[in-house]
Length: 237
Image 1 (spheres, helix red, strand yellow):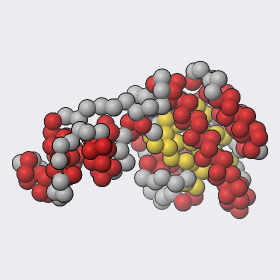
Image 2 (cartoon, rainbow, N blue to C red):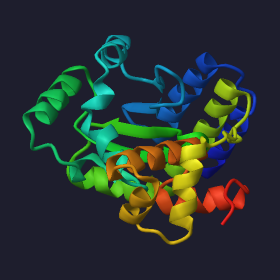
Image 3 (cartoon, helix red, strand yellow):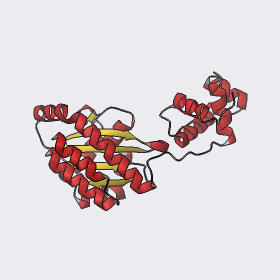
Image 4 (tube, helix red, strand yellow):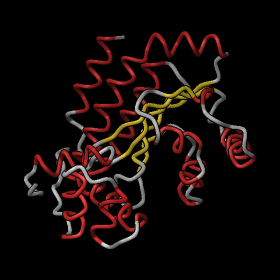
C-alpha cells in the first residue's frame, strides 16, 4: 500500500488541470479498494468543486440543488478538525434522513469517512471515502488506513489549490479600518462587549467585523485572527 500511495502522490505533481485530478481520484478508489472517493472543495471557487467517483447525475444534482447547505457531512465536518466517521454524525432530523436516503439511492453507500481540510484564506474542503461494508469491517478498515487517507487528502488539496489559484500560498488581504479597530481592541484585552461599547456599535455588528477579518486572514477563530493580524503588522497595540 505505502509504495503505491507514494507513487500516486508523486504522480500528482504532473497533474495540470482539474480533469486530470479526476483521474487521480479514480486511482485512489482502486488503491484503497472502496466504492467511492470524493474530493470536495466546498468554498475553493465561487461555485465549489468536486472530483468524485459518484455518478454524474448525483454530482450534478448535488451542486444544482446546493446540497452542501443541508448535507450533514459538510455541516458536521465544518465544526471539526479530525476525521469523521459518518456514523458519528447526527442523522436524526427529517432533512438529514431524506438527504441520506436520496444519496444511498444514487449509490453513495451506507458507510462514509471524511477528512476536513482547511487551507489558506479560509478555504474548506473534504476528502471522503464511502463504501457498503459492515460496521465492524468498516471500523477495522478506517483504523488501518486513517494515516494514509489523511496524507492523500493533504496532497490532493494542495494540488487542487495550485491548479485553481496558481499556488497553495495564502493571498494576503488588507483589513478595513473598522476591522483593524475591532482586532486592535481585542488584542488589547477588551471583551467583545467592551470593544463594541468603545466603538459605539452593537455586539452583533462587532461579530460581523470579527468574522470578516477572520475569513480574510484565513484564521480558524478570533484569537487566531488577532494573532495573525499582529504577526503581519496590521495592528498597532
